[in-house]
Every structure is written in C-alpha cells, then in structure tokens.
Image (cartoon, rainbow, N blue to C red):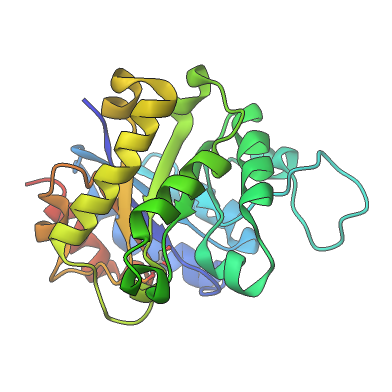
Length: 252
Ligand code: 13P
C-alpha cells in the first residue's frame, strides 16, 4: 500500500532560529503519528538546523529546490552533494512558484528530478494547471503532459523515490481549495498516466499529494479521497497547530 506523505513547504519563510523553535515545538505534537510520513521542506539556510532539531523525531527534512549539475559556475544554485552532506532527505522540484517566477520548465524539472534521484533523494515533483486551463476544460491534458515531460527518461526502478504533488496553481496561496472531488479526479488522471508509463502496479504504489490551500479545516475531506495520498502544504505548515491537525487528519 502506498504511503501517505504530509509535507510542509515553507517557501521563503523562517530563519534558522525560528526553524529550531518550530521543530522543537512540533516534534512532541506529531510524535507517534506513524500512518503518514512527515516532512518539512525548508529554505536552504535552515536545512542544517532543521536536520539537527529533527534528530530522533519522526520529522524528515527536505529542500525546496536542487540544481541538476554536480558543481560549477551556477551562481546562487545548490547541488545534490551539498544537500546530501547536511542530511537532506527530500527535495521539492518544479513548484509552480519556480515555474512562474524563475523560468522553470518541464525540461528543467526533468533534469532536476533526475539529479535528485541519482543522489538518492526522495523527489516531490510538483505539477498542476493554471486557472485558464481549468476553465478551458484542458486540465487533464495539461497534467498528463506535465507528468510525461517531468518524468521522461526516469526508469521504473527510480519511481519508488518519486512523489507527485498535484498543485492546481489557482489554489495556491489563494484560499481557494480544489474540492475533494476535483482533487481526487485529477490525482486519478495523473495515476492513470503513471499506469500507462510504468504499469498498473507502479501506479498503485506511487504517492500523489494534493497541494493548494490545504488546511486544518479541509484536510480530512481531501485526504479521505482514494487518489489523494497526502498533502503539500504551504501557509498552514508555518503553524504548529494547523500542521499537526493535518497530520492528525492523515492518521484517522
Ligand atoms: P498554500 O498551502 O499556502 O496554498 O501553498 C500550497 C503550496 O504551494 C505547497 O507547495
């Protein structure tokens, strides 16, 4: 059975000292909640502190991006080796904010995913339609295309380290959540696409999260859907009580 993964995406929030305080407060609140994996993806400068604070807890630490080259003249970028050495286990790739504001494309998402997998990280690959695409009725085509392009050339044996985060762009940071039915349907379309690419067993195994204004109020309904295997949570992952409530909703 596939794992439910509840992951926070802190985006550009929290300093190292705030990170330490947050994890020390969160750890006892989520202790023993073992029906899901619990991950916090944090800014690069917070990772080492987060890894230290999370030692001996059930909280795992991830980055919010990774570069695809091993090293070299890529000012401002962070390599797999750097992330590995400080204890990072997960990496978010292709978040819509990277696509919207930093020129990320399906081609670079694919390169970053390959680099992350080669280095032994769990890759949380984000995809989803923008508002106009949903209104035009082409959501299914869009997420199928993104799934194919983002995973192009990734062999079946690496798929166990891939998590897909379905994040409709119109639902991110807007307070507009996809309905549980919409989330379930679109996660199901992605799962079907995985089945076409990798076979039915791989499609059954892969964790597909929903992300976009998931919070303590709506998490239980979303997570109850058969195709929704967790959440990638922005705003609500910055509050220990809201994040704990989402973890609890995954442990019912
Ligand atoms: P919000 O939960 O703040 O809408 O952000 C979702 C997201 O982008 C997670 O990656």
